[in-house]
Image (cartoon, rainbow over all chains, first blue to last red; front, side):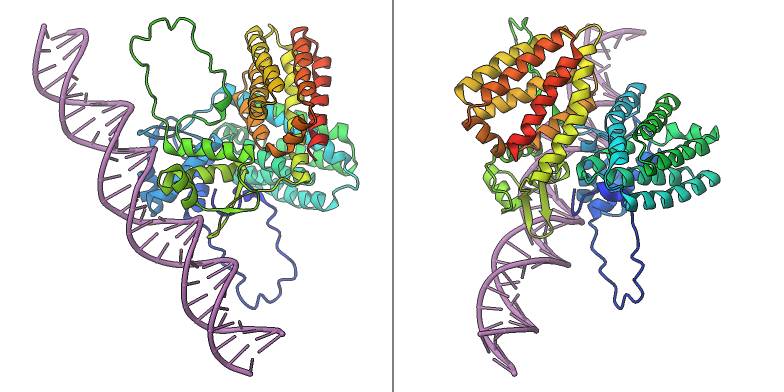
Length: 237
Length: 237
DNA sequence: GTGTAGCCGGTGACATGCTACATGCGACTA
DNA sequence: TAGTCGCATGTAGCATGTCACCGGCTACAC
């Protein structure tokens, strides 16, 4: 919504290695209150801090965040447009309870997008060395998060991993879309995955995928991705 | 953004045939000014009435539409989130000029979504008779619009045709997504298609597709869809 | 002529007051 | 007791005022 796109929340965030002497602060870069509210509320939804079905009002959030209603309303409207919330006229906003059908819809879309995408990445000429390098770094962090059972961190890195790879295709819209779809899978469903200790297994999938891509083996990459998404589909419901 | 989703703008709009005596008006059903502004401005963008690159302000639109700035701002932000506009902080909003790369990105996404989707529709058991029936009706109107060279009408019906079919899969998110992607292809590029008289040819594609679906021939449907999208890709640039 | 500092107009960002409306609950009726 | 009405309450929707900020323009200094 305001300023730059919000879909880049999971961007690489690489720090230039030559920032020896910043001399002066680059720029604070004024982030609008609306954007901040958006991020806060979205994070709360994904983390499952908001009760699905319960009504929340603009004023409530505004009071909590310590800003006026306008930017909050703006943020809530954006989230509603994305499909993370619904709004009842003159009643309030509520987070949608995720039904099995919703999970089905989203995974179906992800299959349609992510599987062909990963195949294209594998076939890329020349190979996207930079993206693969970054993905390897992220993978290391990912395993660490899995070790620690840090679910939120795991989720964020998982997202970053896949978006980094897909972004190598240079299709910004595709990258953004996949990111949004991932955000729609709320955390609660994943929690049992953590409990059951499958986080490592899921993490290893990433390594297999990475090696397939480095070898330029599209078929293996596709197979891996299918397994990955298939597991989500079953585990979630 | 406000009230119900805006993605359903192209919904069937079927009238129940048993509305013999309405007795009383059903309900006006209050549509928010923000939604109306959204629709108006979006239509203007798609129709090419707004000059790409030119700066427009909230106040301008507000004055034109005869409402205050708030709902207009809301609408513009929604359009910006969808990617139809960009906003320059403290400068204004501008419609993005569509580059060849943009067309490439969008058609690539459409291929990833619409081709598998149409294949699934063809394989649907039982066949989606109702959707096919409606698609046939729309096709008739479509050809009429092509005869008359009514480009806007043609575009709207083309959209409705494909969304009706895809919606048979029951994946609301998919339907909405495809609709949005189509909206991102502005009209100007299509204009030369009309001039070159290829509207009928494009229209006939729909008939071929329809017959393939009715025969449950997924391969033929896919081939048709690929041809359809391929033509867009080349014609547009 | 050239570079620059400062002003000025216009814009989005935000706060806030007001209005119309959907809902729930309690009182009132039969 | 069961059903209905009406009002209190809280909400989103919208209008409007204020502010900080950006960029273009101009006039001045050199």
